[in-house]
Amino acid sequence: MAYVPMIARSPDEGHRAATPLELFFDLCFVVAVAQAGARLVHALAEGHVGAGISGYLFVFFGVFWAWVNFSWFASAYDTDDVPYRVAVLVQIAGVLIYAAGVPRAFDANDWTIAVVGYLVMRVALTVQWLRAAAGERGPARATAVKYAVGLLVCQAGWVALLVAPEGMRRWLFLVMVVAELSVPLIAERSHQTPWHAHHIVERYGLFTLIVLGETISASTIAVQSALDEHEALGELLPIAAGGLLLVFAAWWIYFAVPAHERVTGNRSALPWGYGHFVILGSAAAIGAGIEVAVEQAVGKAHVSTPAANLAVCVPAAIFLAVVWLLHSRHFKRGAAQQLLLPVTALLVLGCAWTGEHAVLWAGLVAALAVAAGVTLQHRARSEA
Image (cartoon, rainbow, N blue to C red; front, top):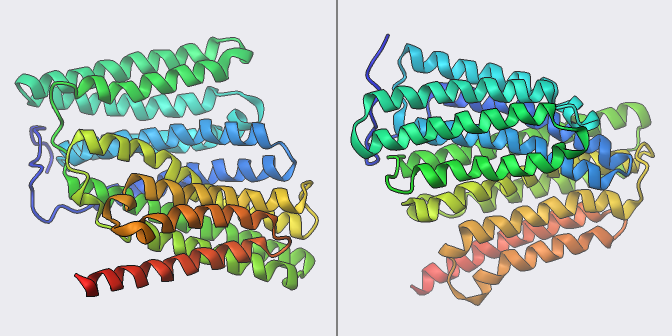
C-alpha cells in the first residue's frame, strides 16, 4: 500500500512472522558483522589481543544496537507501506556505510565513516518513531516521542564523539553505549510498546542463524585459502571438523527451548534482548577464532598454539554459558539438566590447552553435550 496510518499492531496477532524486508535487512547487517570479524582475525593473529577485543566489541555494538532498535520497532509498528519500506532501505544503506567505516574505526580509531553510517540508520528510525507518534494517542504517543527525543540526543552525542580528542574517544564511546541502552528503559517506563513475543523471538533466532552462517562461511574460506597456499590437510582437517561441530552444537542448543514462552513482558524481554549482544558477538567471534586457528596452523599467525586455541574456545564457552543464562536454564529440570551447559562451557574452555587438536576436542565436547541434553530430555519426558 502507498500509505497507511502508523498505529500499533496487536501483540496477540496470529501467524505473525518475519517479512521478506526484515530478512533482507538482516542479511545486509551481516556485511558489517563480517567486517568486524575480519578485523578481529587480523588483530588476534598479530597478537594484539586487548586492542582487537575492545575494537571488536565497540564495532559490534553499533551493528547490534541498530538491528535491535529496528526489530523491536518493527514488531510493534510495521505498516509495510511505501514510507515504511523507504525508511528501512535507508537504514540498510546506513549499515553499509557503517560497514565501510569499520576498518578505519578498528585500526586507526577513526570513527568518521562509521558514525556517518550509524547516523543515517538512526535518523531513519527517528522519522519512524515520529510517524508512530503522529498516529498514536495518549501514553503510546508519549512513548514514541520519548524514543524520538532519545535518539536525537544520542545522535548529537555521536557527532560530539567525532570532534573529541582521539585519546578520549573510547571512553566517550562507553558513555554513549550507556546512553543508548537507557533510551528504551526511559521511554517504556510508563507504557510498553506492543511488540509481539513470537515475532521478536523469531527475529532474534533468524539473526542468530545468519550470524552462525557467516561463521561457517568465513571458516570455510579460511580453510580453502590455507589449503590452496599450503596444502596442509592434516593440520586443517581437525580444525575444520571441530569448528563445524561447534557451530552445529551452537545452533542445536540455542533453538532447544521455546524462548517465546518466557519473553512475555519488558521485565523478562529487555535483559534477554540486551544479553543477545553477547550471544551474537560470541557466535560471530567463533568464526574469527577458527580463522586465527587456521592461520596459526599454517604458520601465518604470530601467536602460540594455546593463544590460537583460546580464540576459538573462549567465544564458544561464552556462547554456551550465556545461552544457558538467558533462557535455557528456565526450561531445565533437575541438577543434571541445569549443570550440563555450564559444565560444557568450562570443558570447552579447558580444551584450549589440549594442543594442536584443541578445536576438534572442543567440537566433540559440544556435540557430546547435545547428545547428553537430548538423552536427559527424553528421559525426563518418559518419567513425566
